[in-house]
Image (tube, rainbow, N blue to C red; front, side, top):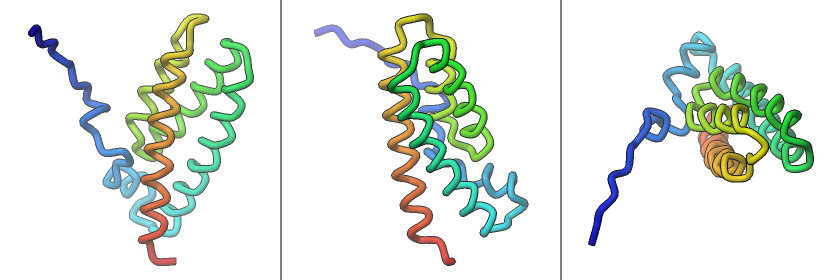
Length: 119
């Protein structure tokens, strides 16, 4: 039986939300961290819904927006998946499915972080 090697990218090896990056971006302000996570969670929901119903050129633009936000909070997997949608040609189905998986994973992580965070 043949085995295939799987290349693991840095994004796959990265935490879902890089807390140290988020901490650095917010200068350690926990209230700001929570607010940015809430905003990113909402933005993910809105942009993914829009991407599901628009043409590839518009989808690429929305993916670019999501990529920038993801990089800002340390969501490298979302950023990498969004970049794949952004640069894909007319055939965006597989990259969009991967982005959806990364976004769902990030949103679940955010929900856990916010549930454990003191208000």
